Amino acid sequence: MTEVENQKIQAETIVQARPSRRIRDYQQIGIYKDINPLDWEDWHWQLKNRIRSKEVLSQVIRLTPEEEKGIDKARGRLSMAITPYWAALMDPEDPNCPIRRQAVPVRDESIIAPHEMADPCAEDRDSPAPHLVHRYPDRVLLLATDHCAMYCRHCTRRRLVGEHNEDEGDPETKFNAAVEYIKENRKIRDVLISGGDPLTLEDEHLERLIQKIRAVSHVEFLRIGTRVPVTLPQRITENLVNMLKKYSPIWMSIHFNHPKEITKRCKMACDMLSDTGIPLGSQSVLLKGINDRPYIMRKLVQELLQIRVRPYYIYQCDPVRGTQHFRTPVAAGINIMEKLRGHTSGYAVPTYVIDGPGGGGKIPVGPNYILSQAKGKYVLRNYKGKIYTYLE
Ligand SMILES: *Cc1c(COP(=O)(O)O)cnc(C)c1O
Image 1 (cartoon, rainbow, N blue to C red):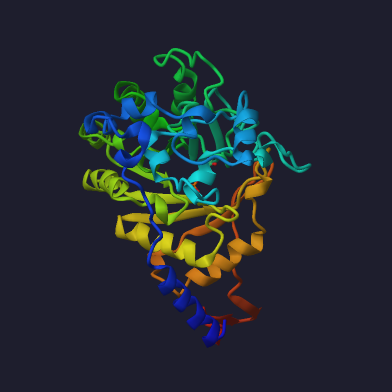
Image 2: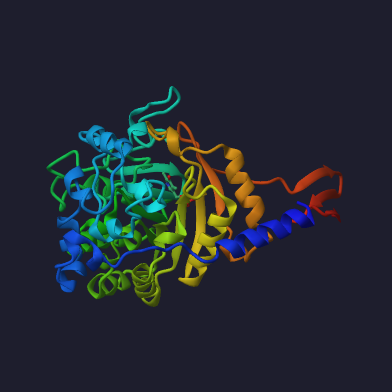
């Protein structure tokens, strides 16, 4: 990269540093203006009052015809569900608002590209027990629920989530086979509880599940994959963090995609988790028109460090059915990595990965810094494009 390009990036970042966070106070929104603040802060109230219809949503934002068609077509597929908290962050007039695009279906979602799949990462194939995916030797993924607080329109697990099934099974017994499998496989030292969103479970159900996994002596630690601190921060209660604290070490990966998601309320939730001793990481999905510009991703990762969240992964958007309108070229991701590494704190730089279609697992991709390699010699370039030779 040239000095001029470099300066351009710096300038771009400064220009964008003033966020266009036209976030409304929920009391300014007609349908929420009489809501008791205690209700607004109650996560059960937020879940119960999720927006599921055009009629309600059109009282919060001005819907476009694309969105109206999208909502109609989403019925019976990945349904729409938007917490009032998330809805209040939407720009009522701008259909390109990143908060809005992640939550409101559009007509393009019903276009299925030829290479798109229902289960692009072949998780069902690698499932040795119900609700369990075992791909890597020492760790497993446990899908604890098919519910989320909000259904992301780019969801890679849309084949499973979205409340298709009325009956989720008996919470006491549904994970028995999965826990048995973990018990019998002594190589499993890391269990990632995801879903759906495990933090949509009631504290007691989540605790019982955690207890059962924790009781397996070769499991060294747990991780929770969630988006709740972003879509429903009210869920992070004293009760929840006190419960989680008992099962330390627990790590948490939070799905963040755009700086606009980092609100004061979200920070409060992350602070509670961090203060409890839960290390926080972020996972982002590269999404066209949402976070595919380097300055936006840079702003996101830098702001994440400010709320004590360590950027962990950026995912190439999986080829899951109906997500073509979100997918960027791989070059867009590599370009973002090029403009992060060296240009900002190393702690702010996540790993860009492609989840190998068909079950390859996460494969890191990024700029190439090794220009040539010969016996005892590496020719490298740095983030500015300067060339250095390292002799072994
Ligand atoms: C992502 C993932 C994991 C965890 O991978 P890490 O790179 O350790 O975070 C484990 N199992 C499956 C099936 C996954 O998709």
